[in-house]
Amino acid sequence: MREPPEGAALLAIAREVLRKELLPLLPADKVYAALMVANAMGIAERQLQQGEGPQREEQKALAALLQTEGALESLNREFATRIRRGDFDGDDEARRLLWESTVQRVRESAPKALSAYRDRHGSSKMSSPREESTT
Image (cartoon, rainbow, N blue to C red; front, side, top):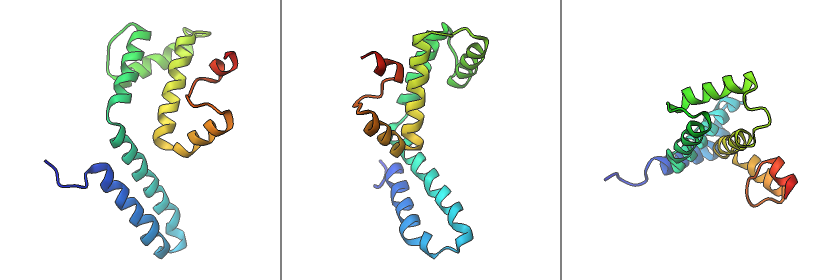
């Protein structure tokens, strides 16, 4: 058993200290680097909170679409190759998978942008723009 706070909470605390207490003390030429560190800590925190589920879901969906098994990285490489080759032109399932993958990446790296998108489009779910235009 781990002593609380654990991983994600530790990152949140450290990030808060960096932003509120240390950042104001830094010389101007170091502020940008410190903000990048704080942002990276936020991404790591969100990844820890979400666990491996999103990667497993993406791997499963890619394997089904490509009709092959493999590690997520190699499946993504194969998917990109086949997209460039035109294998998925007009394929709604491929489009949906790309959209969901993009939403997941934004959820981890820039959740405020995701909130802004939802606010602008009034969508409680993150359907693809094509799906929204048909509903």
